[in-house]
Image (cartoon, rainbow over all chains, first blue to last red; front, side, top):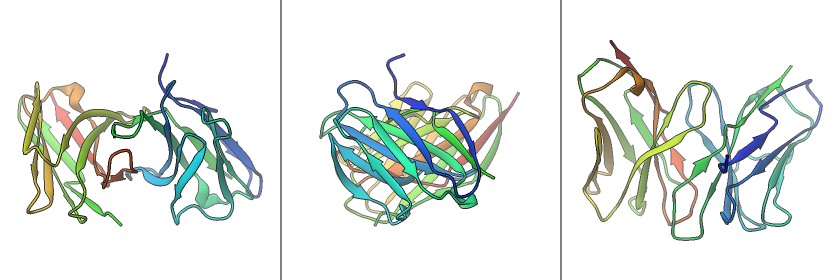
Length: 114
Length: 112
């Protein structure tokens, strides 16, 4: 499967713990996006990267959230001191070079904070 | 920033009938409007998209229309089939490669 890959698929954690998710985009896709989706809602933008540069972060992304894409390939999203309100599906998407807006999504990581 | 409203939130149709989902956007500079289909427990998948220099685009049983003046666009599904049952999301973006802003989604149920 050469699509966007996300790991893990599911994560259950206790409130206050840190969690980290990984996203492997489609090979040679320069742009990588993180979205959050709660039940019955559309995906909400969190942040995106052009290669290794983080170009924009949403106001939704509190100080407890950090994302990296150190070599311009895979990306990680870390949530520190998780809260119950962080429970959601975290979706990663990638798109080709500038000028092509088509986003290809991964299957997401479902986070449950107990 | 961009704001996208989507209606209806749920839509039930009889197999073979047509389904129409409407979206409005707030930023007149937005120029790219994709539609995604998301089946239960699966990833959103792009089904059709339209750019601001085109008024209509069709791909087999699905079509999208865009009215830039009114800032709204619609998805039309003809001859609906049970496999069309899913949640559909519209989205809009300001510039090439920029972030997408999604609507709230429409849950479509096609009754056999």
